[in-house]
Amino acid sequence: MDPWEHAFDHPRPASFYARDTLVVARDLLGDRLVSPSEGGWRAGRIVETEAYVTGDPASHAYRGPTPRNQSMFRGPGTLYVYRIHQVFCANITTRPGEAVLLRALEPLTAGLGDTRGPGRLCREFGLTRTDDGSSVVTGARCRVVPGIGTREAVERSPRVGIRRAQRRLLRFSLEGNPWVSRPRPGARPRSPA
DNA sequence: TCATTGATTTGCT
DNA sequence: GCAAATCAATGAT
Image (cartoon, rainbow, N blue to C red):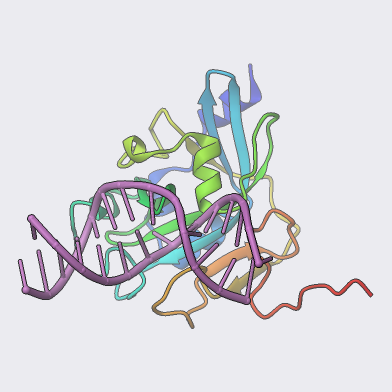
């Protein structure tokens, strides 16, 4: 049996997502996003996430349910896909009104393009508005399966690109992983000599 | 109905 | 380093 097919059939259960959002964001690191496609399986290792929680001014759900964010109020493991500028971003709903943004993957299958950054990640996995509301537990588009464990340390930092609540450390990434979308804020660019 | 804004990416300076 | 691209959700009028 194809190992990716086997993985796809053994996803994280809904109970995995029905926990504290910060814990889910952290625990998703090292897990794998797996998706069937015409050209074969697409899979990547999750290396960077962000948490969006209740009472968080940077969250799309801050002002309560709207037509756009309704997926954040559905069950745990629901995909919330929205458009920003000209790209899409994908989140996984945890508790009602809270979600984890998938920011970067380390490619695990051949043929995958650049998956550093939420927009590129969605592009490479073909995630668009039509995938909003689907499930990463039982859905056919993509699922999250457990990783094999991580040696890398988990690093917390401010979230990227937001205007409000910039001081909260709700971004989680695998320290030193080259597929993380941006270096830690405050880190010096390496000087040549 | 109108104006503003953004959980991004890209390209140019 | 900075601004443009580009569009729909959102809030104000």
